[in-house]
Length: 441
Image (tube, rainbow, N blue to C red; front, side):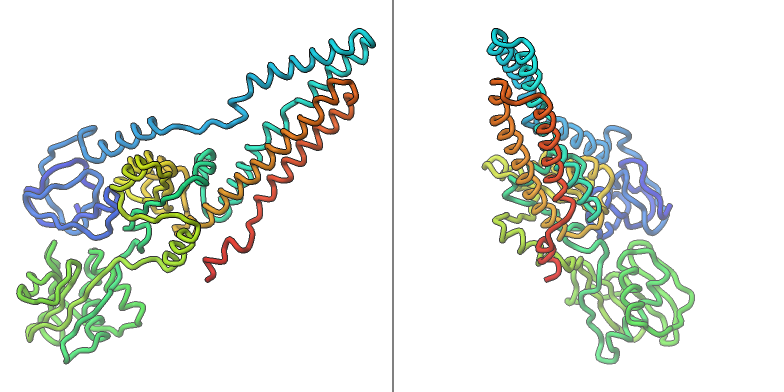
């Protein structure tokens, strides 16, 4: 039935309709389905009731196969390990050795001082600053990005993002609007574009087809006047016919309108005819989002190569490039899972979001630039925190071993060191104004 999803992969055996396969392919243009053509589980029936013969169920459907690919790719994707986790064991052994060394050096002179030195070593080397260096910065930037509409699903991806030198976009739906728009209107000399659009919109009001919706939206934006039509009839996959004050009208494909030889046609076009002949043709396109050009230029200024071909991603990785993938369709899922960094837009299907490292909830491409800049800033602050923790230990541990650093002072130093690391990380909660300069430009 119209509006329902096809439950399985199969073939149309009776009826004609159009299917919305955007969930699987990311393409917003409906696909005509006539007898003998395949339909895919998860796609939506748009126009009329059809009968289908089920050929694939459950795990054998294309939908399930894509999900399986996503899960497999996600498992195969390597995870970054934090430096603190890698050195935890040898660090603990070194701390115990340093404490024992401090006690042994001073034991013969003063048992109390020797024990105090050992305690001071343990306090100084308590890895608070070292263990806080990375998570404090990561959690702070995650909260700050969330307030700007970017969800960080995997915090270790922030480090990987700073190494990216190539970004691959799934152009449809990511760089373009999710709705088709009228790109051009060609009319007979007897009609203006506004008159033709007004007439077409009255017929299109009776259809759920995306091209009809685009006509209605454009007419509403131009405050078109009323034009009466009656006895409206929609022919699935072809067009709409109706009677009006100027006679019988048809809105639809060239074949439906009797314009097979018309040479002003595009792949996505709708024609309006009356009993007297051709009135107008409407061409459609997926228009680019307003901020795309500025955002792409900002990425290129940072030395990032921008690609639009998904098939190139694995080739680029084999050549040693660090690749970020940005997509929104279910078919993008396996590629998102294999990319070094994956970013899903907010309108992406849930399974694509589930395999991504970041989700841009407001669908603005300009936030990719902000995310990249903030990831680099985050790693600078992480390195500053780690450097401070190392310098603190390099200076204070020898003093504690020699007994020149009392335990109370070691405790105070440890607390101040941790506060310094946290305070430095808190700088990430505010964004420098220049980060948004490209958006305003």
